[in-house]
Amino acid sequence: MSDDASDLYQRLIMERARHPLHAGRVEAAQAEAEGNNPMCGDRVRLSLRCDEAGVIIEAAHETRGCAICVASADVLAETVIGRAGSEMAPLAVEFETMVQTGLVPAREDFAMLQAFAGVSAYRSRHRCATLPWQALTAAMNKRRELEHG
Amino acid sequence: MSVAVAVPLFDVERIRADFPILSQSVHGKKLVFLDSAASAQKPRAVIDAMVRTMETRYANVHRGLHWMSEQCSDDYEAVRDKVAHFINASRDEIVFVRNATEAVNLVAHSYGRTALQAGDAVVVSEMEHHANLVPWQMLRDAHGVELRVVRITDAGEIDFSHLEQLFADGKVRLLAVTHMSNVLGTYTPVERLASFAHAHGARILLDGAQAVVHRAVDVRAIDADFYVFSGHKLYGPTGIGVLYGKAELLEKMPPFLGGGEMIGTVSYQHSTWAKPPFRFEAGTPAIIETIGLGAAIDYVNAIGFAAIAAHERELTDHALAVLAPIPGLHIAGAAQDRGGVVSFTLDGVHAHDVATLLDKQGIAVRAGHHCAEPLTRRLGLDSTARASFGVYSTLAEIDALRTGLERIRKMFS
Image (spheres, rainbow over the protein chains, first blue to last red):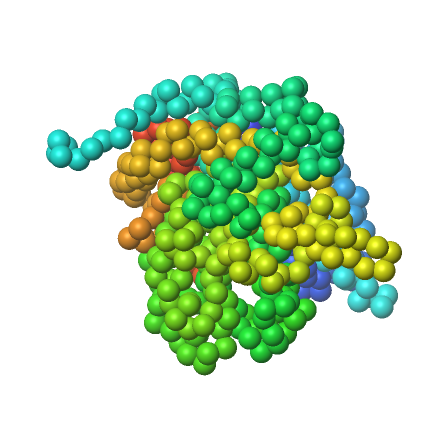
């Protein structure tokens, strides 16, 4: 670990924290959910739109939080666009496992997500990285309930 | 400096040598511990007193008819005298509890449910720690009292004109406020608040968890009805705290917890209660921790509050002077009378990022809402970073904080 925590604050994380590319709200969103961390006041609101086949075609986030949390939400949005809603639950589990262990799955879709593997060394910050993914899981669960409910 | 001003003898390097943990390194850097308001480090004298008790004089207290128990009981009860002397109370007004939080809960439960009636009001301030807010919300919900919140000014001081409005209908029976804010560093004018409450027929409870560490507290001079604090912020161990209550009030209060130690006589049908303070100390107490607290009080007394206060004044002035000019840094609160707690935000950098990046440089600060979430919102913020000082803190450590913050600012700019 270096003095400036560059293992944690990777270039991608700093860029996305400063200039998120997917900040905002999806109009006519079909799935929305909020992730809250009452310990620190961080909040992520995620909104998604899917096509008829259940593929996510739009994703955006409104995040109030630290650099890790904002960047994680932004990279999440970028990662999930174009993917089937049904893939989201296992993907969220894989992401959380990576944050816990620091081990990166050898897969193309983790090329960007792996920027968050460094968070594993900072136990008190795990939640900052995983909060957007918990919001994603909640959003997909809500959508499923609406469809089947 | 004028020669007419007596400068207390204070050698911070000698003080630091008393705290073994301060020689530790963190991430390969010399530890700069600026989180004493959350919990202070422990001097060798406290550590030794606790170890010595366990090694040579330990048994349960107040029960044994043997030498070991008598010695240990004497040591334990001697701390009650020490605490009483420390805040100018009598020994039967000193109740040992787990921490300040438990003390407030004890008063809310025991005093709150008997001395207060539905329709009475309790007033707290906007700058309370959750420990002096949530127990009163619970009392409100369970017992039907009204909870009112007195505003603070933007500088972070009690708004007395609002306080007068809140007391105007004569329903307020208790004012529960902090003696020093753990976020803003504000010292409240406790003598004035006590006199105000009493003039309106109300009692006053003071949360002294922060203040008692930095200033000599005289509960009689303040005319406090209840005063609470924790041992662990006062360089003592965790698990031991103090409730001071005026004898006339404790005498009328029912027990908080039932069990051994707190009884007069017990039959299968009913029991009678011991006199205060034992009425409020059910079960085997935190014996070793209490003895540790006694050693902490001795330690602080040996340095003296005149010297401690002067040192911390210098630290606080220095911190405000070197942090305020950092571009984009905003210090929370601007009370006239403030202690060694400086909470701040840095534009464009979340407090958690500040804390993590300072930690990498060996500097420990706290970040978040500091168990005062409504206050953080009142300030229009989500979170702050907080540097807080103790008797062992140095000007060089504050300079290290400034350097660290400058680095972080550059990294995020």
